[in-house]
Amino acid sequence: MRIDGWPWALVCAGLVAVSAPLSAADDAAAVAPPRLRLIVTTSMALPAAVRDAALREVQQIWHREGVAIALAGAGDAPAATAHMRVLIVSAAGASARPDPHQWPVAELLEDGHGQPMAIASMAAARRVVAAAGLADAPSALAHRQIGVVLGRAIAHEVGHHLLNTAGHARHGLMRARIDARDFADLRDGGFDLDDDAAQWARARLTRPSADVRRRARFVYRP
Image (cartoon, rainbow, N blue to C red; front, side):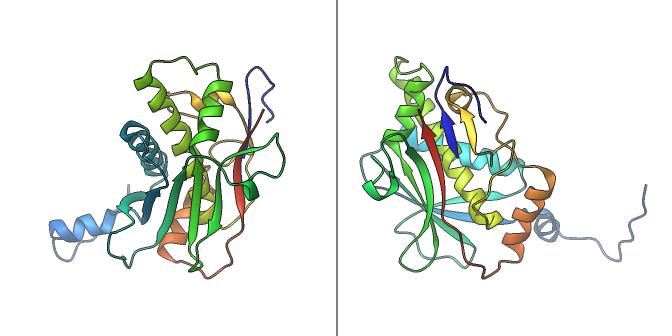
């Protein structure tokens, strides 16, 4: 996804038969949303406020789409549930920056075991916040803004993984272009999936496929 800095233009009654009462556990299992486990690591001393804001944003975005995001650290024991790795780095690597005008906020790759991994850049998130004219905010607010940007970028890559596509939508979470001020806006809204895409994403978790994952990026272009 490309992020355009400000003030650059935005590009972009029925009957239910019950044969026996359900236990509380059965009832909870019947309505529990599909779950994706994020295994989160960082390559630097990430401020706790930034990390918390980022991961909270990912969880809130996908909760609205009926997907539960469970968080885990790198040292946690492997789980049988579907999972995806997230690595937050200080800056994007040279291979992730094809030209000086393109700054990936996050991109979706595969780890050494062929599992999906989103790499998110702290430096690129700061650049988006600066382009939105918010660089001079107090430290606590700045950390939250940077975290929200990182969280939305990671949520976008989760979308690429669950939808199994590098394509983009015209609106919402999976759009290809967004204004920097919208990207860093702390208010909710504008980062959702349409009903069909949300249903597909949930189905991928309940019926995972072996399709090849496609490389995708979420980038800011000044």
